[in-house]
Length: 183
Image (cartoon, rainbow, N blue to C red; front, side):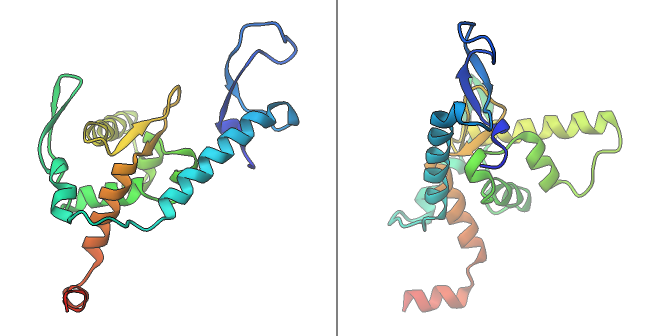
């Protein structure tokens, strides 16, 4: 783990062992080695789950049926996902990238992937951030991602990994490949 500061540990301030414990940045030394082991183990588990092939006997139509319907999130209606539309495919590709399996992704991370250039004005920056927040809310409402507690990061849920992998795989497959599989 080269940059442990992105992770948190519940501990008192350095130099005040009897002080109030809070979630603080993970330190590089051996003092937080127990927490480093916990974080590394859970990150490895998430990464291995992401690398595992989607092996399900569930038909694609059944997998995506729920995300193609509107739902509610915290009492507000959220539109259905359109898994074959290019904006949603770009979002699916972005959230399923391998580097996000370990530490999750933030609004800012997705902005850099989904927009070609940096925002020109402060208003454009706010507008992009709000758009990404709405997209994240939509993914959360459909149970494809979940928030990492006490952070601004999100990770894919197991269901989200299955659905997104299936949609992206179906998008790449050709009719010739389907015909060979059917024979």
